[in-house]
Image 1 (cartoon, one colour):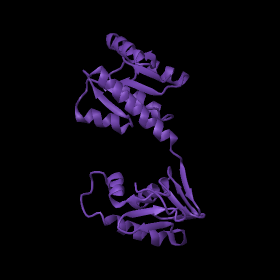
Image 2 (image 1 turned 90 degrees about the vertical axis):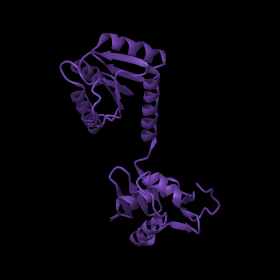
Image 3 (image 1 turned 45 degrees about the vertical axis):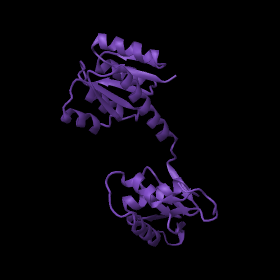
Image 4 (image 1 turned 180 degrees about the vertical axis):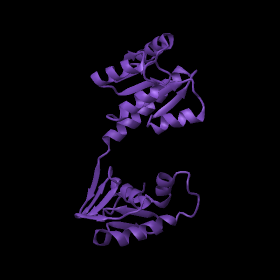
Length: 229
């Protein structure tokens, strides 16, 4: 059962959150101020923290900052402070979401579920990707051929990461654009070809990228019969 720490000083809201979230199948632990929240967080393991900002003793921003010094546990901030500056402050402290009061309980539950799913996927991701001589350090954002570091641009690294993460599958240009550029790029999809050309020069003998003419690219030349992604 997933365990959620609810930090809320308004006891009526605290009780409402407790009953609704517990009924949804989560284990719930309560704290009414920042000091109590940090004490309970230090003594137990939680899957998510639901954190009010306007708290006695230590406010929610302070609690978030202390937690982030030692943990990547998902944090959803709840607050009546709905201006952009306060939202940005919470997100800058690496909160995962920011919900303003009053809020819908069903919407809150769906946001909790979404944040927990994202966290689970991130925890399942490997820290390195390897193929033959090629290694990608996903945390350090570094690429190696053998023991030699290869200087890649962020886009080159991301393209190579996608190809290695889907080794053996054909990734179309459009697929790479949608995954990596999202809404930032509306131009010609041949920009992918330019990045691939630069990647090949830098990889040298470790260029394992195969061009599928008119479609896209893949890594794993031994595996010729693979689906288009």
